[in-house]
Length: 482
Ligand code: ADP
Ligand code: MG
Image 1: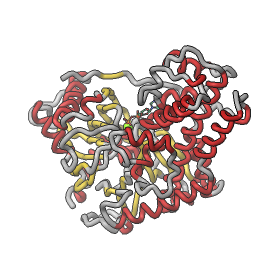
Image 2: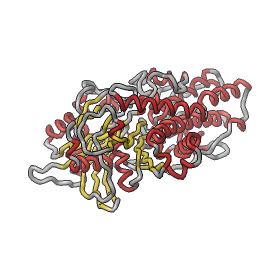
Image 3: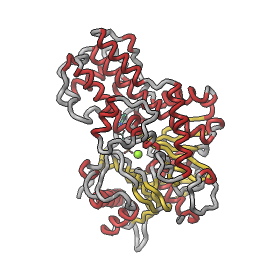
Image 4: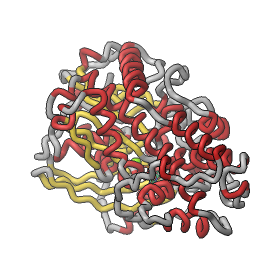
């Protein structure tokens, strides 16, 4: 089995170059009406945003009361906060959805962290194959990382590893849990109900890799911890990457279903908020969302995530474009072979199209003609594409705002200085995602929220956080068992 590291791409983040649909020279009244209908359908009005926020808060309360609710509100077993003084070296394995990262984390004290990391792409076949092969692949990656960085372990010693396994896991201890369901395009057989830590540890043992899995962490929890290491006022960790989710600091007295023992009065709760509105009562789902959902590996699940996260936004956009093509309102009714394939319209293209401010929409042209092999496009075509992209992207950001607003109101954190650490390529690269979220928060709370709440990129938070969690596991033996 081979494990190939991949280089990380750096795309500078730009602001959205907004195109007002009123300024498009439409080719027909029918085209104009079609765009107006999409604007109507994809706009999350302030009223709707607030209704979603209220519904979300009710979901939080239900999930804190008992297991099996739509918002799983999983106790992470991570108690205590970091204050930046901690020192030590840990290993982290971050399985997020698209990539796998192995990170060595060195805490130097004084809020300073140095990391070395290697990224590996997870083959699509492994995602849906048998669980053993998937976990063997993870062990191979860690093994080759140790070789590459010449990390030598002497005698019977073992390196402590924090395992970021970013799927819904019902945690039973800091280093134990069971997979509730797969998400984000994964469906490896025989895993639901199993403990990912045991499977990973077995894979290490099979290879005689001197690593002990010390903590099982969700990426949201890791992100919260990583951001808190140099922003002590952090109250929430959020992922906006392949999928979307959040974790926040909750009072244990509010977690009615918590039966464990601990002397701490707070715990990080992994919400699994991508599952929000399974009942489909509040989210403004369109036929384009439904079509994408139907063809996904987990139909009817993770509806909220599918309207927000990087894995899906391109596909929703593609569905809208195909619909316009079929109605002969775009590209003169012709589709390219590439666009006709599912999942070919990457969310990363949306970032480039959003940032395209050239009058001729040069970047958009490049994507459509060079990448997606349309023989030619008109300015009108490109303007319609850009408008569609903007509608899908903005809706995603505003829906995330509704969730964050729910947590901020539930905790009261919007009233005082608090920080939200966000990791994931969508947040990192998508133009104006942060601005759109803040605008949404202001609609809910008023101007004051801008002074109190800050959003920041917790770069590689999910990986670094797993290392920090391995450290906390060592520090807080009190939460080892429920
Ligand atoms: P993971 O979720 O595996 O930890 P990332 O945070 O890197 O990984 O997120 C990967 C997701 O981000 C993919 O679904 C991809 O579509 C999306 N993505 C990657 N690059 C960009 C970009 N430039 N703009 C917007 N989304 C992007
Ligand atoms: Mg990640």
